[in-house]
Amino acid sequence: MATKSRQKQRRSAVDHVMPRHAPFYFGLAFGIVGLCLTLLVMPKYAISLGANCLFAGFLALTLLKVPHLTASYLHEHARDEDTPGSGIILIVLVVIVASVVSLFLALNQEGGSEIGEIIASVASVILGWFTVQVMGALHYAYEYYQVPERDGGETVEGGLEFPGDEEPDAIAFLYFSFTVGTSVATSDTKVTSNAMRQRVMAHLIFSHFYNTILLAAAVNVILGSG
Image 1 (cartoon, rainbow, N blue to C red):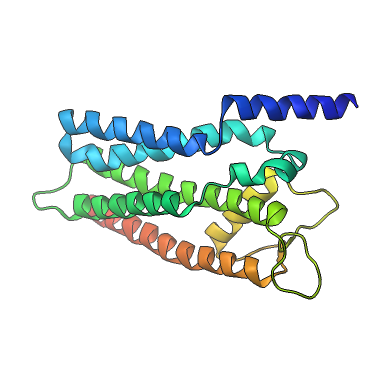
Image 2 (tube, rainbow, N blue to C red; image 1 turned 180 degrees about the vertical axis):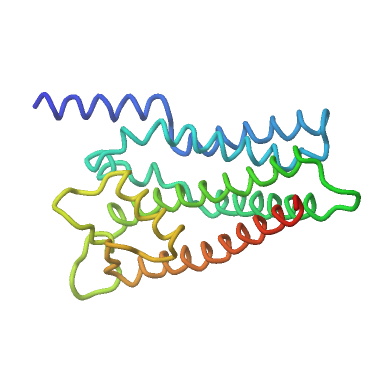
């Protein structure tokens, strides 16, 4: 009873401090402020620093929530933690594309590139990659705990089968998402439904192209500094 009471208190505390989508909206506000301030002082850094503020704000608040995102919490609130609404995805993708374009413009501008501009642009692309993986993890948690099986036949909760007997918490979903994002594979976690396979396939394809962009950027930076 005492344990359940403490879990409820932790859940209510998290809900009170951070309402639904709070990390994204905080990051968006932080990004807009960063963009506007940078436009006034260093216009050429505006896109990359604005993107850095958005991604860093989102990641920082999400990281603060991770210890509270236990399996029991996600059973009840996975929908609240799921960030990838269509509007949110569109905003993030637009910012990522802008960051990538800004990076390659900085790397290939006539007269040479400022090191600060390159660092800011590279950081925005890398932080964008981390943001995609974290958003993917939160969406996998939602799919696993609160979206019913849509494929017929055997009932498999959420479409993922994690090894071991523990119910997956935020760390388990982060592990799965980062595995997909880094190795373009699913490692030791099985995908058991067609609905989830669609999500994972989209993640795999996106990660492949994003990783290719990161590799191309790294080559450009090395050649440019050589």
